Length: 415
Image 1 (cartoon, rainbow, N blue to C red):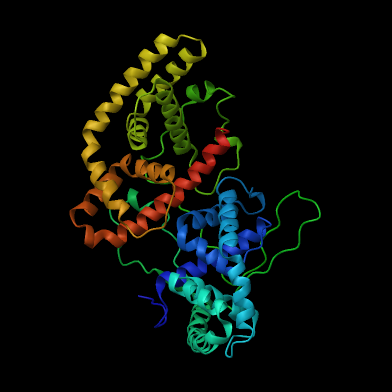
Image 2: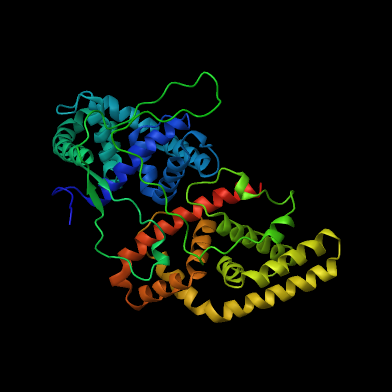
């Protein structure tokens, strides 16, 4: 099985790889970014950044900086606001420290390595607070980190993360657990690793492609998040969609890997939640996912009837119908409630980044609404320690795809 060179940590290597790809994406967004900023964002929001890189890779020239991309820019601004001044001071300090790399690429990797951890950031605070007194200590650390940086530079030219599986692993009864995590690059890359910012386009007709980078953007996201197999489209239901509520997914440029049929299910989940908000029933997102995806035809029919009642002003009939829908949801809750509580606690302890509650609840919904997803999750709960790493990787995949569907939902149902 291919392995990274000795001394190269897989987690740090993959974060660096995705961070370099993220630099190219930020050039497309006209927000040039330093490597240290992107590394810190990736460490905290790994799946979000990776998912947006996949989305760009699928759209290329048609890519529109919408949805999650704005969140990335906002988070980068926050990182720069918090730490930008200390990085400026660090750069001035390093100019006088013996052993500091002279070429810009090694220097940027050096700064990213120093600031990647809390201990490193604390060291930076000491150095810039007392430059004269800390010069000797910093010099020793810089020389040690320089060797590490060179090892990672070499690895980034010769290795890359393996592409994600062609479809959701939660929809497969079995998946090889020993699939290589990294692949050799043939031939090894040459030239600069870090992309440079592209000059602004003269006319903003379409965003320019990012500057060429030796480290390629990761492979596109898999076809769909875990969920039931796509069902045949329902022409009659498409005809009843109200223009004010949605637009046909087929007419839109959707994020890479978004299946229009599953997006239609996600849209119905959103409609159900709005109905329950209006009638003040307390629900959980996973319950609605199960209702929509496991009882698709009955739920679709009830939803269309409820929307007609609401539009025609028949408020009492609308409330009565919503209560009937809620009774169906209570049966789902009784069937899966305890299992979901146990699974939520298990997933909450996994070593993944921090994501919004809405994203996590939708990801949980995708897992629970898939029979195979539930089966795999049941296996995780039988031996949490044994399956912890597998579950973390698969959950991040689901979260990444969930964010693609959140972006697509905002395109279909304007907020």
